[in-house]
Each structure stands twice: as C-alpha cells, then as structure tokens.
Image 1 (cartoon, rainbow, N blue to C red):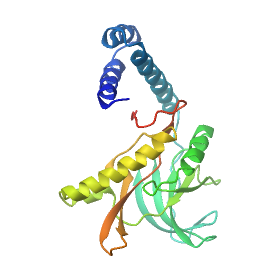
Image 2 (cartoon, rainbow, N blue to C red; image 1 turned 180 degrees about the vertical axis):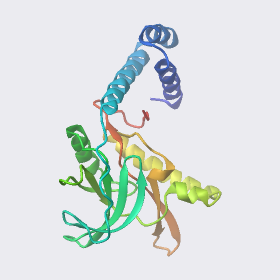
Image 3 (cartoon, one colour; image 1 turned 135 degrees about the vertical axis):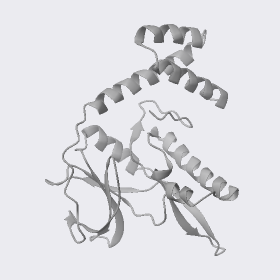
Length: 237
C-alpha cells in the first residue's frame, strides 16, 4: 500500500467512525467511489474496531492489588522497588531468582483473558533489538495478572522530552529504530495500539567505537493481532 493510499484510507476511516450505521454506508459509497477494495478494507477495519471496543467496554477492573514492598515474592520474582504506575497497572523492578537477572513486572488491574494470553504468546515470539522482550505472564490468588518483561535502564521518551528539545540527529536515530521495531511487528500481524512516548524507553548503548548512542525499546502492551497480516501498515484504535 502506497503512502498516499494509506493516507486516504485513514482519512475516510476516521470520518466514517463519526457517522451512524445508516449514514456510514452512504458516506463510504461516495468517498470510495468505484474503489471497491478500499471500501472493503475500511469496512473490515470498522467492524474489527467496533467489536474490540465492545469487548473492552465489558471488562470490569478488579480491586487494585495491594502495594508490594521490597522482598515480596511473585512466583520466582523478588520485588526490589516500584518504578511507575498507570491506568492499566503498576510496574515494579524485580529479580528473577531462577536466572539471576533483573526484570520489570507489570501488575495488572484486571484478570487477563484467553485472548490476551494468545496475543502475549505471539508478542513473546518477536525477536527485535528495539522491542522490549516479554519473558513471562501469570497470576496468583492475590494478583489477577502480571507481565514479566525485560528490564531496560534509562528514561522513557516522555521523560526525555520533558528535559527539552532533542537534537535532530538523535531524533532521527530514535525514529529509525522505532520504525524498524514496528515494521518487525507488522510483519508478524501485530499492531501496537498504545504507542506513545511513555511506552518507549531510551536505553544507552555503547558502540564498538566506545561512543554512546541510544537504543529505544517499545513496550509490547495493548497490542492487536490482525487475522490478515498487513505488513507496513498500522491503525491505532
């Protein structure tokens, strides 16, 4: 799909979402004209988006798990400190006592569905230097669901932006690596549905020439698995 065609698809899609079912059909017929393939693609995206929104609207978060203190155990993972919190859960730094490595554990506020587990398996299969590795997923009687991810040193892109403008050369370096990570995910039929600066960590990276560069890592959460693979395209719903 060319950039111009994707831009047209995106514009029509967003305009169609604001219309009711009766007005939507008439709008698509007019906007797409004789391009039946374009109309079918947009209708498919609209159907998938509505179905996903209905499923997510039925999810009722459980009571927030009690805060964890240093030394607490979640399976083989020993909590070291709290890192961050958001609408979807709380993130802790922890030690994997089996392998002796540091990890990041995200404690969810709701029980993970079967669909989430299937998508997590696909995300765990991604192998890219700019995608944060998903190591494990599970639950306990006290915790409805947790994700165990690679622990990445460094600030989020959001925090880095708060410090002031980023040099153009560094912006291009970050953007290229994020684009490469997304392309790898799209090739596997995976779309990241919550890509934002807060979900990108900027890790320092020392090259063979001993100069320091940056290596962004995308957190693979809130993803969407497409039934039909669509490489090099994405739609955040």
